[in-house]
Image 1 (cartoon, rainbow, N blue to C red):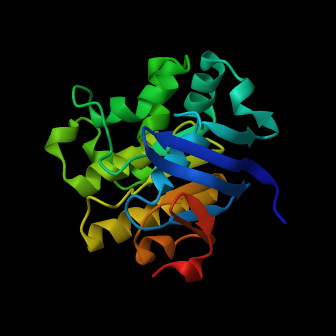
Image 2: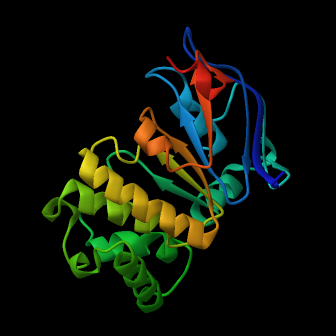
Length: 226
């Protein structure tokens, strides 16, 4: 069994009267791509946000490399998300005022890397995601598929240990979505990052090493998907 890098146990989370998680258990192993599947409203995105330390569960525990996220202060959790975690969201969430190169360099700059070195590394990642010629453009000047490749480059530029991807191709057509997933999975396998991949699409989950299913806030097995 591969090392468990990130472990959530008996996770509960409610938003008002709505129970999003009802005792979910999950373990993410080092270097694996884990697909988290389930219907809309099942709690899969809530599970991702809890594992990433973006929101805190109401009860249960989350350990990353043996450290309890609940025992960390806000600054420690922020540093963790900046240096060891990477994020890819459905709509990219690039900063519209910055060029694509500046967007990818931003996590490095926030970590104290000098501008020239940060942008040199960012350019390497843009080249790797096959959008290197677009570095001087802004997000509003490129297609959705191109923008999502930039979002992947930004997520990987710090070489994180875990990448959280929430419906990363949900806003793309099937052709662009497949291209983004292929580039994404090739890159994370090269860096040996683990991936928590939230999706409701079987073609996206096919890129993973393992699948779990979230239904009604609990984690089940792939064969339970209708």
